[in-house]
Structure formats: structure tokens, C-alpha cells
Image (cartoon, rainbow, N blue to C red; front, top):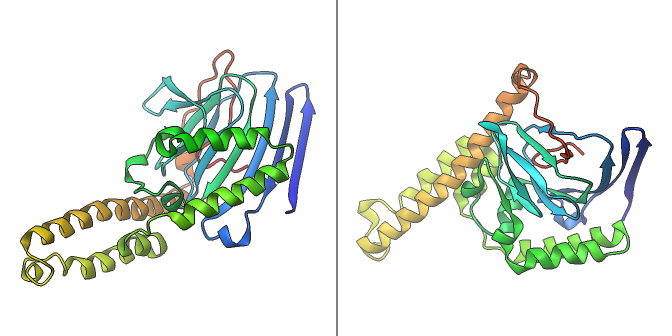
Length: 266
């Protein structure tokens, strides 16, 4: 596995960043691995812009602070965590020297890795242990104990391949929305909702089962709309870059260190 290593040291502090591509079989879902260690001389807070990637953060260092977008004086500290798709920028920092790994997933890759609909994660961060249970701590410790970055990236290949292969496949509506956006979602739902229409209820096992199918479609419609809406918002953001330039600068607090999370372009 080839890696790209970048190091820096000055009066500002020091950092090391290592990039690697996932195994070719994972690349439709896993876009990049990035490892880092950094210790800066002054506090730092970063503004992270929304992108089409969903980050998974494996944290070896100080907790990561994700600030409340409505009230930057409030924040939540996280260890290892992930986020859903954000439709605005996010302010992030940390409480000291930081290090770890960031895995950038496609939206569909995140859906498969977490094995759950992504609607509940929209515009929020959530601890990895809350999603993966004991596997989150096991994975964090295994990666921390590895001797080299190459070993860590090989562990990630194994872990992500196993979870993606074991995941429950999402509905056709979600797949179409992830590939073709809002129009694809509407076409998929138009085909699927015929099955749950009143006229078809007897053909699919009675009214009770038709209601169950309809409820499932509503759940999947919600996830599909998240995928389609996020895509539309990202296109609008790129077409109107002044919205980013006008965003307020983030706070910097004593002892706070910036650290990349949702959508950081490492």
C-alpha cells in the first residue's frame, strides 16, 4: 500500500499527516484514509464545510469539540465518532494534542458501514460506541496499538470490508437516490408505492401487510430524501461560494485545539 506522508514543524507547532487509498474493492464506498498527529502552540478552531463525504473519526488524542451551530458558546466533546451529512458549516476544535484516523465514506458507504438509515444522523455527530457498541472500542484500541500507519490502514481495509459485506442492503429508493438524486428517488418511489396501494393490498397478503409495506416505504423515503436534499444543498453551496465567505469566524478558547471532522479536506 502506497502512502503520502507530510510533516511540519515550526514555532506554530508540529504535525504529521499520512494519506492512503483503501483497497480497490472498497473504493466505491471508502474514499480515503487519513492518519494524523498534531500538537499546536496556540489554540485553534476550524470551520468545516459540508461535502458529499461522511467522516468516521478514530480518536487517539484529546476529545474533539463539535460546537452548536446555533450557539457557538456551547459544544459537545467526542472520542471516536461519526457524523451525518451537514447542510451548513460546522465549527470544531479539541482540548489538547490530537491524533487518530479519519475515514472518508460515500453516503452509501456510511449507510452500509453503520448498517442503518442515515436520516437520524443528519446535522449531528454521534459517538461510535453508540452506533457500533463494543466494536468501536475494540477497533480504536487495535488501531492505536498498531506499530505503523501501514498496519493501521490494513486493519481498516479488513474492518470496513467485513462490515460492508455483512450489511443489510438498502431499499431501491435509497440506492436510486444515492446515484441519481431527487429524480431517481421519485421514480423509485413511484414504482414501489404501487405495491402498497389499496388496490394491491389483497394481492400482497391483506390490508395489515399493506400498511407494514407502506410504513417501510415512508421510512425509506425519509432516508432517500436526506440523500437527495443533501446533494441539492451541496450543489447550491458550490454554485454560491459567497455564502461560505460570509460565514462568521469560529471561537477560539484557551486550551482548545482545532481538529478536522465533518468534511475536512485533509
